[in-house]
Image (cartoon, rainbow, N blue to C red; front, top):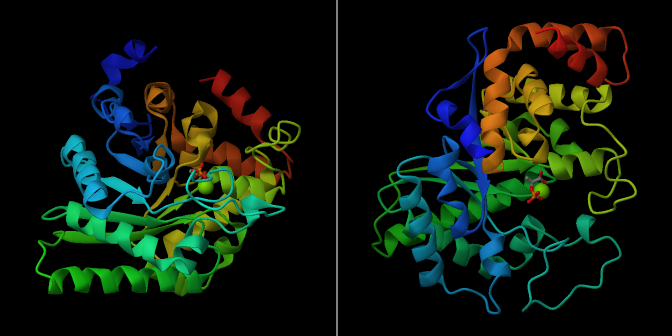
Length: 323
Ligand code: PEP
Ligand code: MG
């Protein structure tokens, strides 16, 4: 299927209106990296670092991690890689971690919550990233931030590690960009300072949607029950786009929906200019974006929202069928 889109590999995802969307890929294992060349992705918008922790039966050592992260950056050959710090807990349980007996692990002790409570692991990971990025631009992204205080704490820890590494005489990254994943509805309404503190924000649509609709993403009975193209979810996304525009912070989307062509087009029309998806989706998403006017689709969406349509899938697919 990848070959069908091979001719698009080096072409931009530009709509007929001239709007260009950056297409990135999600990764987490070394085996994902060769896809960067083949897919035509412009970078790695989400590197899920927990996968490296999940495939081992011991906590990786700092030197081992630094080598691995360096290898990831080298394989990306200058393309940006957004490293997400550990998102463990919830569905991702480490073999060597005491299982937590939590009634609702997805809403429990996970991701940045663990990182801030067990700072040693977060600090070790940040040190590895800083060392790996010697002479390069480093992107660090904190997962599952649900409160500005958590972001401020994580940010402070990163700044502390940066000055420590410098003091110890290590070669430093040439530049550092710090961001957050926006995965809980609360952050759409966070204080302006949160957006101003972020160099970039990435919507984790899988979690954002699960918490917005209170529908477990792991539960087959309910996980497809609520549509990404429902007006209520699109209005939430609109709010996030507006907050990011107000603070001039670049926004991307890295949940599964970014790789579904109709959803991807809708995200683009709402003003999200970077989408990160599984490598095999880059071709099909690019193919569709290049065929239509994102500006025209925006008008269709605005009109349908204005009319009070509860779900925009019909008007959007009907419009697409006419293109
Ligand atoms: C998300 O929540 O949308 C996301 C990209 O992160 P993960 O799927 O790893 O939770
Ligand atoms: Mg998530």
